[in-house]
Length: 168
Image 1: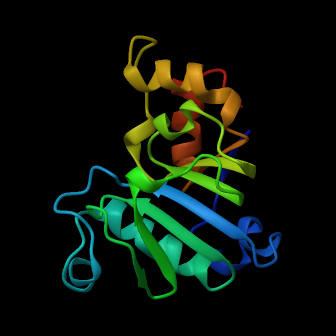
Image 2: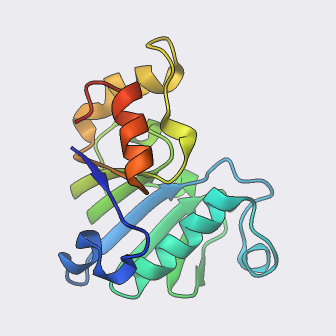
Image 3: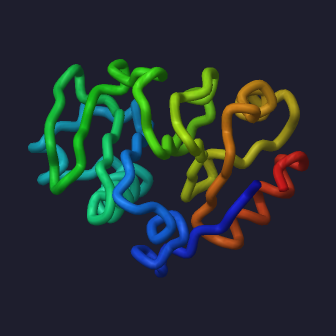
């Protein structure tokens, strides 16, 4: 199922209010350069998507225990209530209530040990122009491991529905 998450709703989002203090894992931005650490989070963001990921995780951390797996070069640190870990440390057997793949489908090559899995994107990273596109092939192969897809606007939702016809 493809859903639209109203960014203005934030803490009133169904994703937030239907879960009572849950453990959430987010796989995101493992391609970030330079690697994320406490200093770089204080001084700069890498782009809009990376900044959004951090803000999204911080908002969820107001209600839940949140781990973000990203490029940290093996470092593990706590930043404003969010536990940041290196993406290579993601363990598919570690139990989570919810696992969110942010912007990339490839983390769903195997089903994480989670009650719910969701793909989330806030930008054009998932807009697929043909069946030959690598993201289309990943989604075809991994969609059985994804329970929900969330987009950040109605506009993005319509673009995804147009480019990925089997997503409803």
